[in-house]
Length: 501
Image (tube, rainbow, N blue to C red; front, side, top):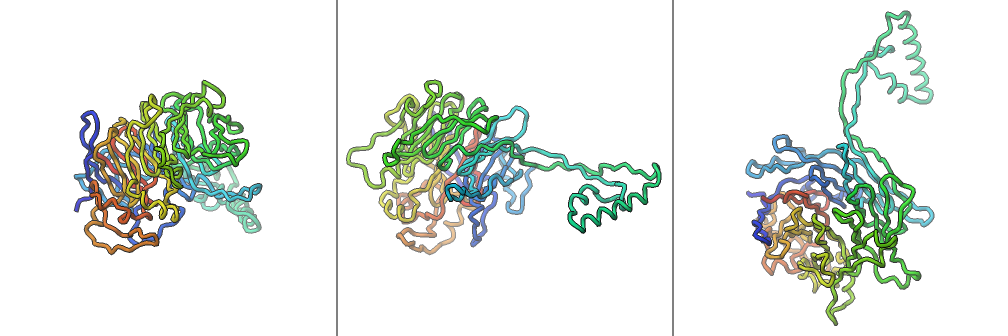
């Protein structure tokens, strides 16, 4: 039985079609396994080299993976060995994890602050250390992850010489601890009658452990929930955005930030849109883009003015007359955006479509990719079960030739930048099993079928019908490797990787 998620993607400019294959999976669920809310992945990102991958989850944890040569890869307890025909030079292994954020409570506003990781971003360093930013709704933290040497000592001057006196002394408190220290002191005084009895402690072993240290905490600057962070190309500053403001920070200063975008009206009743994300230009540290709930993207230059919301260039597609409805603004809200590596294009995802904008054309996107058009008739049901508010990530390949985004049924959709046939890949270790095993269709409360069979290749029109969509399985978060055709996608608590040759 093949484990490949295979398909062909048409590309522009004579690019060869991509054949997608399953590569790896971390934390795959077993059938019937209950998923803990804290284990659901909420952020995925590669570093600029692609050597490291980071994920954040709703429990406030950050998990790191590193790329290893194929021959050095060992199958872990939740991994099966990859068949020889599927081996790739791009394989990853678990590196470490740490608790980035804890649940907090704002006593002034009587508001509970969740530990969920909203975004994770890698910093580029010249010293070879691993540094990254992580944020929850209110607080941004700078972490340094590196090796630490731990020495094992022996041959002490008390007891039988095999105990670590420091750990014993530090680990015992109160009456019992005091008695133990007095006993050790008496034993040491009895043994050390002369200099010949004095023993020099020895290092019996050295072990390297991976340790994460919080270097800086950037807080108390956002009234509303933080939805995005982005590091500038000079690696000295970064921006963070919430519903109404974008702040500029310096990585070395935690006590101040500069407000560069503020769309809060004098009267909150006049509020018509909110900021949904922000991202720095990949090569110009003075340029950044931010998106809004109206479906517009604005590109601002910090050299033009201190407050950039008025002078920003706006990229927005005009709606057809008479096409507005109750759901128009909800489905046009931009949930994610990414710059192309050359800074020429911006890829934006709303609920229904994926749009590619050229910086030289503000009136309309150069390409619009339909993602959920088959769900338009179900918008009322989606509104009632809150699925219409799902925020899907998007990604663009390192060479700018392909784009991808997630969908329901744990589907990953990939297409060429200039359009063409799309490839649909299911986030599963064994993607064929749901086709081979017949399952009964169970109607949900809103008439949306559960347990429908799925295909990997581009589905027929009948399979794209909303009746075959499982809205409990959604692929929200993903990232594209900066140099290779490799995609990391998070489906619930599982991280899947797919590669194309």
